[in-house]
Length: 436
Image: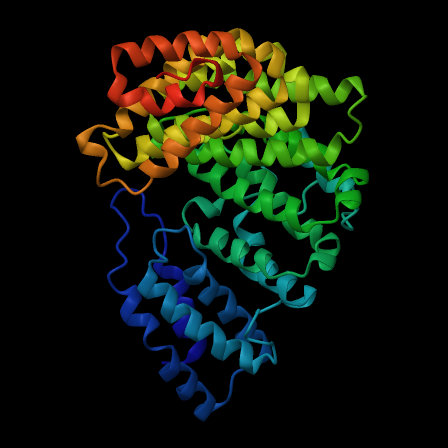
């Protein structure tokens, strides 16, 4: 098969049909044929540099993790294909770093045509195109074509994500007009899957781009406004936990980038808003273990940023964490992981405002006792993280002893009197109540 026809057929293999489920039965077989396709074309008339770059974009769509068609077998084949392409492009295969010219060529051919500015869409997105000074002339506010074809051909998002990972940090600014519109189109979309894809790309941009450039250019502000609606829990197609984790991860990274002065009122106000969002989202999560873990993980960064000012939300945050410790730890590994997360957040919360936290010592001890008792249940004996959970329980208990020894002593004594076999180690930890 002629090489261009070969990789074009592979690109067209991933299309969302209007009714039937996608079938990827032929993909693996086709991917095994890349060497033969290269050999056939090289023997005939050769392969141009443009074709090598275009085929790199296609191969990348099967090598990017996090996409259903890029399973381990297909990814392994795509990686081998990419290595051969990079060799022909004189690119080091060890890190596969792309030059701005190659990245922009990939975006122009295999990303731009599938995205658009969405007429009548968000003003934020349109303003950003002008802000980037991307050479838009004639009064046009749109960088890309007015299309959302990516819904039917989502492989363009996989290609974009793979390529973005491989742009040098110093080249991010020069390619921002190819990066930002895609991110905004995805994070502002109504589909949770699109938001997840967009947030992954946004985190790459925020982690790799120069902080001063992102801040002074206004890009950070644009992304922050566009990602606000991602700080929500949704049960759509099981994306709830990942959307929470990525959404808050992006929001926290942006807050650290945009608000630098702790004595600035805007700093505290912004972090308080993020904390309020955690409290509000907790009302909708209910018993979703993965989503509870993802949400609880955000409390420690809030404590680090706010310090004692986190006390404003201490009551609801303590309630969130203690409630999650009341799920039987021995029921499943995900619940055990939830306990680990909750206790780590309790450590951060107590460290941030110890005096105020002491008011809730009895409540926290009660939740720790529930978790501790579960680690001694016969069903927990085979779970790998039980020992770590026990260590964290004792660590939080030590914190509480330091800030509220009398209240902890009283609570531990009651527990020991009721179940001496379970809480003898706790009794030994309270200095003023060593038993004979």
